[in-house]
Amino acid sequence: MKLLPSSLILLLLLTITRCSSEKEGDLLPDCSQTSLSLEIVETINAKCETPGEVELLGSGGQGGYSYGLDGNTFQSSPTFDGLSAGGYIFYVKDIAGCVVSVPGTIGADDGSVVGAVVSSLASGCGGDQGAITLTASGGDENYQYSVDGGDFASSSTIEGLESGSHTFIVKDGSGCSDDGTFDILTGTSLANEVMPIIEANCAVNGCHGTSQQPVLNTKAAVMASASRIRVRTSAGTMPPAGRTPLTQEQIDQIACWANDGAPDN
Image 1 (tube, rainbow, N blue to C red):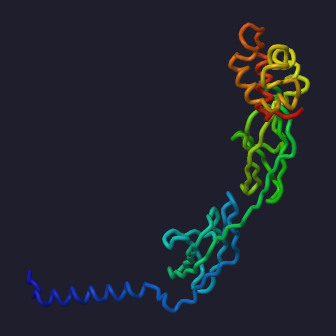
Image 2 (image 1 turned 135 degrees about the vertical axis):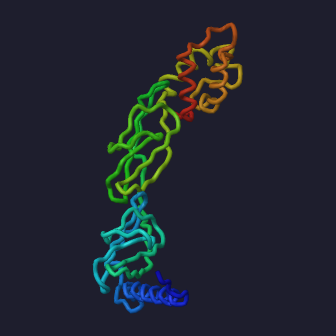
Image 3 (image 1 turned 180 degrees about the vertical axis):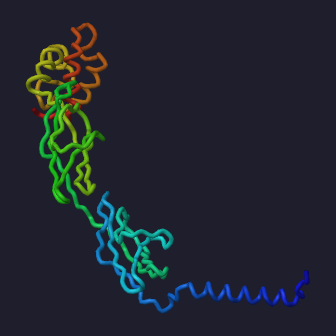
């Protein structure tokens, strides 16, 4: 078999390579002169926990549009949702493979939900009968309420609360919210519950009734000494040794009233 000269083989290889390159070049689109364009036709801003959305529209080019956010992944739908507030680059690609982009921004709307306490009910001393009624305004009015981190519910009245400080959150359907604090009192009465205990056990002759300071024969005097009375009765030093001690219920009533802020009630 007669072999071809090496120079002829090299010439054939160069010719094949050039033809192959020219053929591949004929298949590549010339996107430098494309009429492909992209516009943002609608933008919905993010609002609190509700993300934003954008709708795109491609035109010109060779049709068969697909859309993307990162320039690499494309989809047939021109709508992108689940977008947080911020700046984006949006892309459109036509069937010829040409790609153009436009910048866009998803804004953030203020929800302006305002929550407030309307009324509250006392818990009772050592009880859990307390209740709170909340109100809300602003937002989309689809309000839900939560107290002390509990589950959200549509009812604005929350029951079964013990005395003390509590927190609340009000939110609407968009996730916009407001929060605050409130106190539930025990409702223990100075006149009907505490004064009878003091008068029978402390404000007596030889003690805080006449000679020993502070004299506790008036509501004003008891209110002024509320913290001291609570500490001493809780410690068991009031009444002093030798006198009939208070029951635990009596001690609790004095503490509940003092912890309510020693009101004149």
